[in-house]
Image (spheres, rainbow, N blue to C red):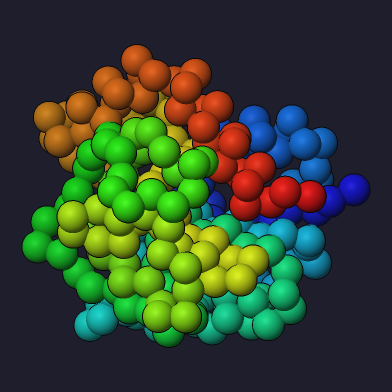
Length: 213
């Protein structure tokens, strides 16, 4: 049976949402790995790295985030599949020769991407980030936004800026956890609420593309 490890914080940006329902549909064994435990590399077949309020952007990368860049880089040497979501995609970019910069404001949107090169990235996605990816020159750029690269691939490692795991409930809890004015996340919440089934189905199709076996 395939074993999937998911790295996250223990109590923030940790909810699996659409990822959990997809794992259940595959019948895979799930191992939760938490940053707060300073983990070693998991004994798993695939690795997913979720979001974080910390940063790997130039000038903002503290020691724990720098350690995570090295940690993911070590995982990549094993040629096992990887998916980075939001912060996890930024870590992948830094691990493979790309870059990450701090923007002048946080982007919270529910929109489709430009330059989409994989059908599974079509449609509207939930994006919540303040750091912008430039994909590594050796990678395949798969989708863009006006202010950042949205998805890329380096071998069997994928980085996607959108929170494909998000549900409307997760967005609301995250907004309230960080005391963000409701007006700044309401549009995303409404988009997910009104298209929850479609968003989940597209997230599952994308995960099938990232992890085909």
